[in-house]
Length: 161
Image (cartoon, rainbow, N blue to C red; front, side, top):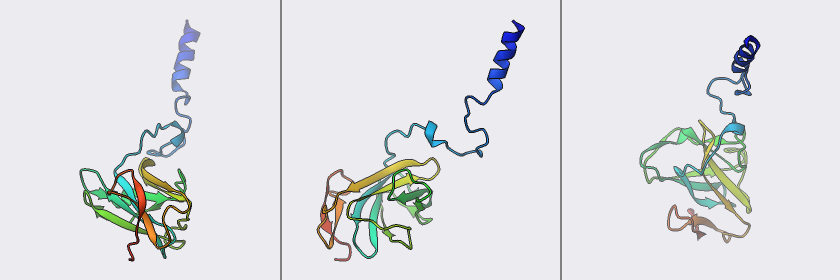
C-alpha cells in the first residue's frame, strides 16, 4: 500500500500534464489550444492587391471599441513570427481602418492569389481571414465584401479612384 501511495504522489508531482514546464508564464502552447471558430471582432472587408502600396480594410463589428495594437496581420496562416501588429489606436464600433501593406511596412506584399489573416496577439486567435484567387478583381479595382462585412466578395472600385 505504501508503494502505491508513493507512486501516486510521484505521478501527481510530475510534469506529465504540462509538457512545457520551462515556458514563461502567460505563454500559450498552440498545440494544446482548441482555437474554435474565428472571433469575428475585426473583419477583413476589402483588399487591394497590386496597388502601390497594397492595402486591406478591416471593420470593427464588435459592440465596443477595439485596441488595434492588440491585433496583428499576416499573409501566412499561423505564422506569428511574420504577423505585424496594427498601429496602437482605438477603432470604434462599426469603424473602418485601411492598412497599407508592402515589403517595408509589413515585410510582404499581397499577391494576386493570396490570403490575409488577422489575429488577436494575446492568444493567437484568428479574428478573420480572406483568401482570394488570381483574377478575382480586375486591374485597378479591389475586391470587397458587399454589402460591408457580408460573406459575399465582389470586385469593387479602388480607393484611389
